[in-house]
Length: 85
Image (cartoon, rainbow, N blue to C red; front, side):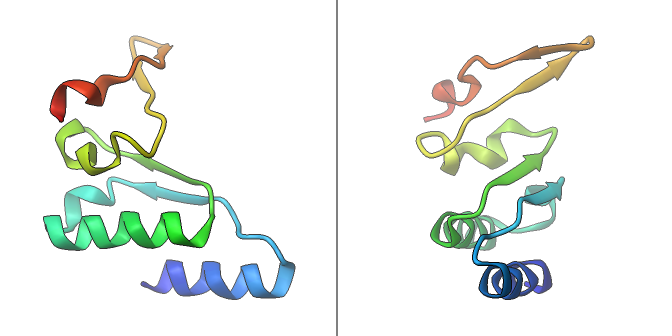
């Protein structure tokens, strides 16, 4: 919530939301709080990059976000989460 509050303050001061970077954020939240975080990020209009090792945690974003997988120094942009819905 501190990061989101800071993002709102910067957006007010600068007129544009900053880019948000979250490392393994979904792993530390329960399902209800993950979905609330995702909803809050979308409502803010900010661009967010979230990393994670468990694709299933990002399933609520399947129809609202782009997904990238990095493996063996290769970037792949296939829609991995389609199979989770």
